[in-house]
Amino acid sequence: MQPKLLLATNNQAKVQEYKSLLSDLPCKLVTLVELGIKIAVDEVGESLEENARLKATVSADRSQLPTLADDSGLEVDALGGEPGRLLARYAGDNASDKERIDYLLSRLKGVPGEKRTARFRCVIALATPDGKVGFCSGECEGLITFAPRGEHGFGYDPIFYLPEFDKTMAELSLAQKNQVSHRGKAARQVYQALKKLGRQK
Image (cartoon, rainbow, N blue to C red; front, side, top):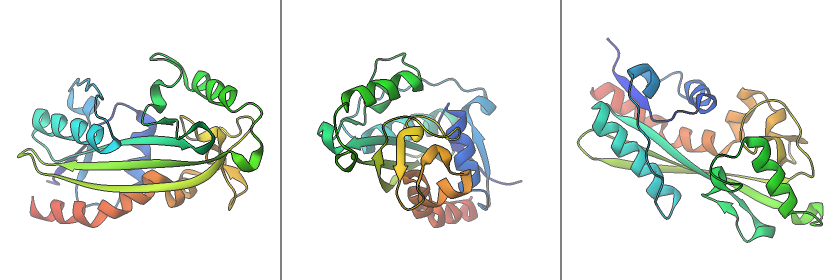
């Protein structure tokens, strides 16, 4: 029987990305929903690292499985680095992706294209039930568009433009996104560590 690795997220789009990124691991990727575990971790940390650690350690302790959790941020230079780690709550706690996008674009009204530089950042925490935690991170540089484009991805992907593709992240296929995204870069850093963990279990 394959060992299990818990993906500590309730975001199903993110689950699909990780299952694609980590498809060759010698372990079975499982989710909180699949295990029947309901966890709501307050992301009260002051950094992406702290929030990723919180989610990973709480979920590892509850499930008694090695656990991967991440936290991401969007840093827009013209807004002094906002929304940063608060990207999910930038337009209010219960805002939709469209409302968050509309709010961010409204904050950038009048800012010319060349000044709309931004980056996605992702920090992954890998925690074991005995409390050990490791971190890896990835960044992706781009520009914020003037209007949403594309039907793929989630969150702010429709307004995050990648000059090298002449597309937004939401216009990329999942395979293309995984190659260049902040989450893909971070996942590739932990790939060997997760494979080693799988062999040891």
